[in-house]
Length: 507
Image (cartoon, rainbow, N blue to C red; front, top):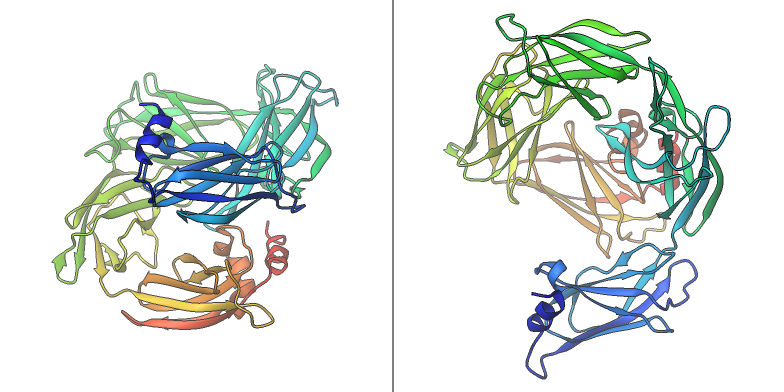
């Protein structure tokens, strides 16, 4: 069925029950109304691909959707030169809806080779934003483009913020060398890349990216089964600290990873069959590449660690469904995930290394009271499987979670809407956002001591960095929760400038 026909049938209502949504689109920076903006309307709870309809703003930036059924709708706006903007879900009828569109930022530049000559058509330019994973800075790719024939490039559709750029070419190189991803201003180290700041609607020009080649190396070795016999046809995966992967196969046990740059890696096995299957052979071998080939690496595949799990609520088996994930530490690798059903789960053939246990999608009204493995607490400690010994992972839930509520105020004592609240425990960080009145609530917390801090703006994940966190813990409210208790706090807002100043000190 055509989308417009589906929508017309969906929205057919008796006369007198129809409603409309109307409003105006403005430029966020100039406050001028925007004509020719494309408006898209989606219905809550129904496949937006089938129900979306559109209109265009007039010369005064006005738009209107008529003949709608009662319900909730979202309006999104698109226009050349601006970033897509949308409303939250709106009741119908709604009038005087205001959409303010930020102008896009642009970066112009050229890709140059080692001699400063432009590289055209084959040079790939990538754009990254900074993110933080377990308190460590990482770069996340957001978009990319090819350079033009003269080496020039333009990156658009950028919101106000900080970006990192790189260039790379697929050119053939001499043996022992390879084209590498090189970050602005001129470094292969993503952690040393210089930021490029873009303001809303601004154009950054004259940026030169260098495409470089560098020495690369090989990792060679032999793969065996648990009996010491060479393996053929096994796929091995090379995983870097930043999560990038490459793979190779084995012949008579021999394997080789080529064109590997200096850094820390983990070799893991990716044999046939489903992950999390019984007796799946696995391996976890850390490798460090310096300024020479790494040879004679031995990878022994053996059945991984078997971890049965039991989940209880009080003395009874739990009926809640959620996920248990083992996140590898100390050099990375691949995660292992199991789904909890009827109070049980099983993590099979887990690689022998050190993990953090993460709980996801736990239903509202519950929290994790304790987790024990081989009699040891693993809520507050890492799960060390490096010896290859398995045991039962026991998770105890509580149906009496605690909560923290509060209000965030600025230096004048006024409540602050949309402030970012960070609730810190020994083991994790949980975020919350204040509402229009400056209030927040964070539920489903286990008993314990917490520190609560409010920021005007903060990059996601940076609070897990110990140095950054220590800078603001003196301004935190300290809260001790008992099982089922609720505590209320008043928080003083930490400015974006203060957070940015401390973040700039981090490596």
